[in-house]
Image (cartoon, rainbow, N blue to C red; front, side):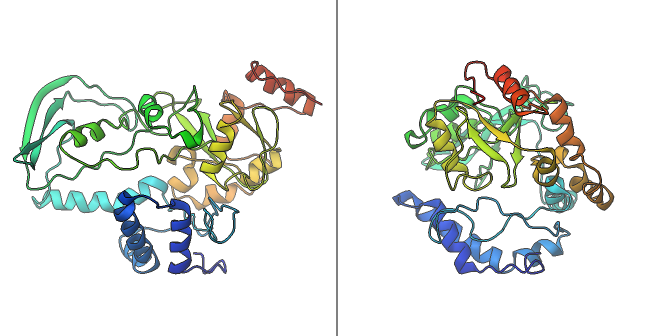
Length: 361
């Protein structure tokens, strides 16, 4: 995709960008560094062919997220590397679900849904399995909170236990506990880009069994979050995927400094905004910019890409409106202000954040 667009990349450049962004400087970074180097080698080698063989396809336009702007050795991507899978998240998962289901049909895998692990069992210093609670059946939609009422218990023995339980993004208290001083104070108000089950509970359970929890302070929080007007899970947030043209102001109405443009440096922007003392910032843009550059994260916010519809993709270029989901947020989103004049815009912004009024002048 990038070669078709005339872009040039290499494993050496990708490795340099990764190490410059990661800032590995601790003894416990030995394994993360090895993982990073192995992944870059995989990405530069067989990854695309391997995924293509399994049916994955990609949108032909490659985005340039986290471009940094600090020079060759600083954090960020020196070249565009943001690929969008045709079918978005469901499209990524689809071939792997198919392989798991095939293995299940052959008796190679057993799936135990609604089994909540409460303990990793240990004997003689060796992990021997897991035990926990069988939760009652639930018909909740994907991402929506489901019942945690117990319907039984279970215990499984295993030669090896792999914990793949996601992060801590929906557990705001745990986020605050691990918040690093280098990012200032944590926001008083947060929204969640992940469902409620992403609560980090398996971290403590793993640690109790002797697991090593490293780098809990190295978190990645987006500053471009907006409240979902049609939430699926509690405090459901949607991230804006911005182009570079929006004017970005902090809560005081001051423009963010170079190179903290939209989409350039998430952690640098987060640290800067936390230093202002406000939990919000502002994107100022026109209808022309929002139509051309503005996108929202989430498979449900991109029905054209998720549904693999070239007709809907082509419709983006027709007319003056942005995509349906973006226009819906303009109309119904609590974090949006739409106005025809600058005076009306500032008045609307001040109604939204009366504790931090902006001066029109």
